[in-house]
Image (cartoon, rainbow, N blue to C red):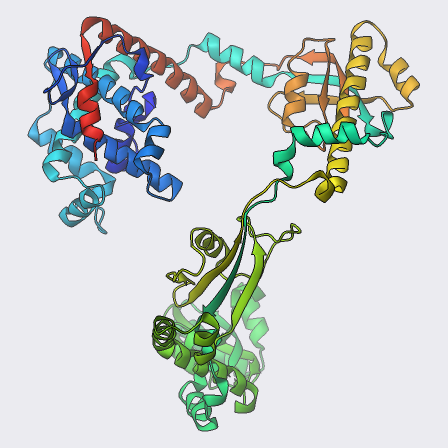
Amino acid sequence: MLNSLRNAAGTWVAKLLLLMLVLSFAIWGITGKMMEGHGSNKVITAGSTSVSINEFRLAYDRQVNLMSQQFGQRLSRDQAKALGIDNQVLAQMVAGALLDEQARKMGLGLSKDRLAALTAEDPAFRGPDGRFNRQQFDYVLRQIGMRPDDYFANRSQVAIRQQVIEAVSDGLKAPDTLLRAVALYRGEDRTVDYLVLPKSLVEPITAPSNDVLSAWFEENKKKYAAPEYRKFSYVKLEPSDIADEKSITDEQVREDYEKNKALYTTPETRTIEQIVFKSPEAANAALDSLKGGATFDKIAAAEGKTEADTLLGTLAKDKIADRAVADAAFSLAVNEVSPVVQGQFGPVLLRVTEIKPEVVKPLDEVAGDIRKRLALAEANRVLLEVHDNYEDARTAGDSMADAAAKAHLKMVTIDAIDRAGQRPDGTPIDSLPQPQQLVQAVFQADVGADNPPVNLGAAGYVFYEVEDITAARDRTLDEVREKVVADWTKVETEKRLAAKGEELRKRLSDGTSFDTLASELSLDKQTKRGLKREADDGDFGRAGVSAVFGVAQNGVGLFPSPTGDAEILFKVTEVFEPAGADANSVPEDLKKQFATGIADDLLDELVAKLQTQYSVEVNRNAVDQALAF
């Protein structure tokens, strides 16, 4: 919100959207006058600065577009109004107008050269080379529906407003006194004694009478309502559905095998060792030593080489970068030492210690995979033709079943499904293709309607037809009695356990010892040490830790266990302040958050001050005109 404009981070598009949120405050908190006049094309006037109907509508449309992207669907006018977007935009533009008026009074401006530099610096407009790219600039503006002139006007406005904001908030830091208090607060740890109060303390719970159960059911009837169910059929079309392996001949398989034999070939590999010498003379002397009875290993040791130094690796010939070394190594027998080879890094002697010969998978071993791949390739080629034939059959009046049969496709019928993709018994239907999109489409379709298919990946379709709709309804108690009894029992148990826990908490608070309570209840008193304020403790959870730090030393409390099957009664027995807590022990990101909060407060004060200096008028008739479709 307030810090978004000040930070001015990210792409220019993001900065523009953040600008639309700058200094947002409740529209009804504006102290200016609400105009009811007719004929003016000014939505907002702040001193001598005004916002036109077109400017307001542009800002409104952008905000609607942004929210629509977040919701994944285009918001209607009524939906936008329900979200309060019109008032949000109005408040944002009033704040912006106040800043613009202050900038005007101060005589602030922006040169063309500086505006050009700001535009060129924006990462959103950079091309592949990292520099400003005019085509990228034009593309980004088209995406948000903005003309270049509008962009430059808005970019200039952003920069000028930024000057006002930076004058108030730039360089602010949180005081060390505050940061030390934060360090003490964050670093404190506690020791607590606690009892885990199980449900067995209040169980068993007697089954409720019919009157009690009926009353409870009526209060919670909506929880047990039957959702809307739909019966529909679908036909899936993707390459695997129409691939016909029988249509692929043995000759086609054989030809593909020969053409792509490299795919089925594991090349010969050799384990190669090498000794690199400083000079040809040293290499030749070593070779003479070999001929005189010395071994490769002794020569390597004499050169100060370890086994790791000499091992080049187990490699195929084409994986050896040095062609001379590759040719020489692949001409040797096992344990044979090469003549001196002039390698890229100097003269070398080579030895091959193991040879794994080339392996070619026989045709019989891979024929099935080849046949399947060729059938899928052919299916991909004719997929659109099958799609069109199916659609033509439907257009001609064929039922889904008949059209599917003609295309050799399978029709599947789902007798009942709710919006969550579940059957009436609550079990999920896992077999649906593209389930989320398909279910959503089914619940937007009418019975018997001809619907566009749901796309299935990059090359596939799901055709569907709604056959019947079972409307949502309230279930009777008899239909769900077993579940209602279980739910009532669970809630009643939790209620009674919480009441029991509160009784014990009060006794503990009044002076009864933990040991006495533990003995009475036949429970073990437990102790937890070193509990930190921001911990997500495995036994207490975040809520439990918050409860522990919500009382003073020797304070007591009660909270539900994270597992939901018990209450935890506790007493804080020790509180320890962290040693050496000071401003430097606060993380940098937290320091920035506090500095941002202080800056936000100052900016709030600035806006409040500007409202007293400049008369703000909002023309509601112009607002309505701007929002009229």
